[in-house]
Length: 166
Image (cartoon, rainbow, N blue to C red; front, side, top):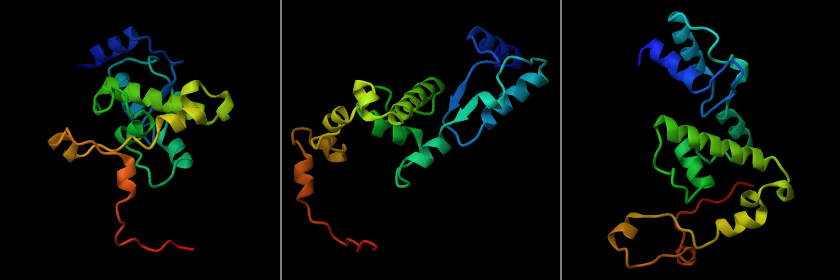
């Protein structure tokens, strides 16, 4: 797309200087680059300023364990394990849809459990993330007739376990 097509597409989609952008980044650089691209082509006043752009990764880093990856495709699977958007990453529309859903989750998690929507209340989360949910493995594809359960995994011996720090 050339600059004229980009400007027309943005206008047609309803983007204005008042639009709020959420993005799965650590900074606002993509919005800045797009704004500069449009300005060089003679288009101003289409995109909002940086004050209307909210990168979500820094917010999530403050609120989730460091051991959890901040890759959108990983975090989305943790928050929405059975969603049909899983596996459709690195394409504009699915990434935007996943980012919006992750942002919705963040909003919900800042509320008390009783004030959250049904999907994010403690009781629903406990049911949703029950023991029977197990990570898929290559064995599931090679031997689909054999079922695994989380209970069976708990009985496996743990080798080379390092002592915990005190």
